[in-house]
Structure formats: structure tokens, C-alpha cells
Image 1: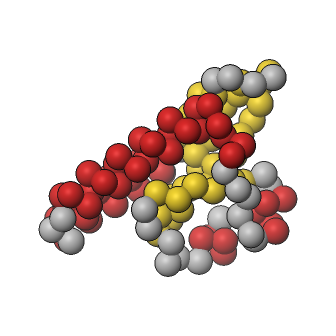
Image 2: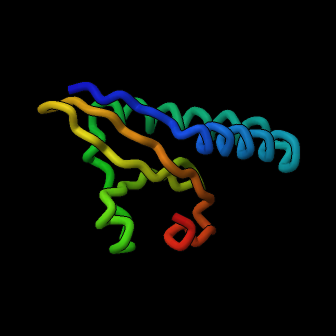
Length: 106
């Protein structure tokens, strides 16, 4: 029951942006550390319990098999592709601030 978690390069860049903002602009390295810890927790859960996360309310995103996870004030969008019973790949495709209209941006 193991899933490989694969981040889109844009998500990796976005994580860097968020942590940079929290440290440099918001002057809160603790918030940045908490964000990264929360992200690590979500990744650990995605590795074994990918389907425990809900689908977005937006019907268009749900129809495209997206699921979402919250990391503090941020929304992580991903899709799960099963390769065999109980295993597969989780593709993390987007990271948005919760205040953004992410449904319209995907």
C-alpha cells in the first residue's frame, strides 16, 4: 500500500516562493517551518492514504479526478493514478493560497 508522491516542478517552485515569503516578507521563519512540517505530514499521508482526501467541491475539478489537501492556509491539488491494487503514483500538480480562486486557475 505505497504510493510514490511526485511533485510538478511548478509546485516545488511555489513551495520555495511560499517559504521565502514567510521568512523574508512576513518575517516569520516559524511560520515557514510550520508550513514545511505540514507539507511533510501531507506527503506522508499521501504515500499510504491518498484516497482519504476529499475531492474539490468544484465539479469540473472533481470530474478530472483532482483531490485536495490543506497545508495551513494553502490548498494542494493532486491526482492519484493506481498502478496496482494498493499502489500507484500521486501527482501533486498545484499549490494555491486558500484565498485564491484556485478552481478558476486550474
